[in-house]
Length: 162
Length: 152
Image (cartoon, rainbow over all chains, first blue to last red; front, side, top):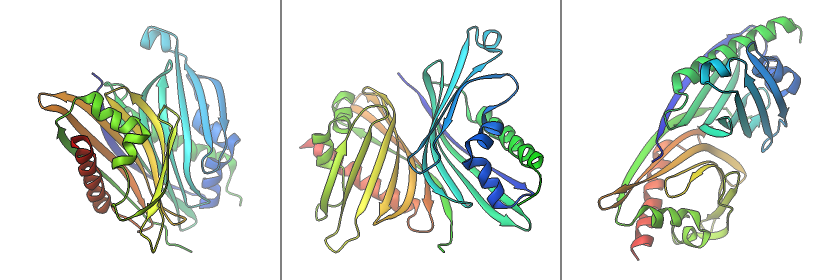
């Protein structure tokens, strides 16, 4: 029998950049790739994003330490569909994660951007269904914590211009 | 400008049905069967119901009271395990306005009486147009209709 576990988490972050700039790091494929896909230990096999409501984002990446961690060459893939996009304010998307072609989670996520002083308050909320004991909410939350740090680094490197 | 606001909520509904998992699953997988129980109250007008039941396939259902507004559900199927599990995401629209986006998991498990059905909805309700309480009540009504349909 299949087994399914449900869990949710919320991450709140503040960035010293206006909502328009923070949002652009999600809407521009090049910027998104820089912080969301590229990373040490990952060999990017493909990435494409069509950022509009109903559009898809697909990435696949080989985990460099797959052999030693999982005992086999390990390719992860993320398939995303954008449900709602409100420029500079809100993004809602659903996505699946798969390891070597086998789906192990389906998630619904919302990202909310609001102005706070000169900067932005970002609230990321994810609801997920994990299959057959795979992955787990703690790993997923840790993954997004790291991604949102990378987003901050990416924004800081871009500078503080408008 | 609309004030943006989101409310996140999760609810779980469990039902024991006097029918085997394959029969209950079929009431979700087959459009003719699903159309008998899935929709608004009987007095509502139904305008469309389409279902492409496969991973990556979509479902759309709309209808509403005679004096409006139209209620539309658009779903996308993310995971299907025959007779065991269905995971879909769906949005609800009231007229042209999106009022929620949800992830819905339906699990079918064999039970001595037949099937234990567990539905878990994790949703984000938008800009004050809807709330999780109302959605949960509505889902109970849908499952009542499913039970009546299976028993008939």
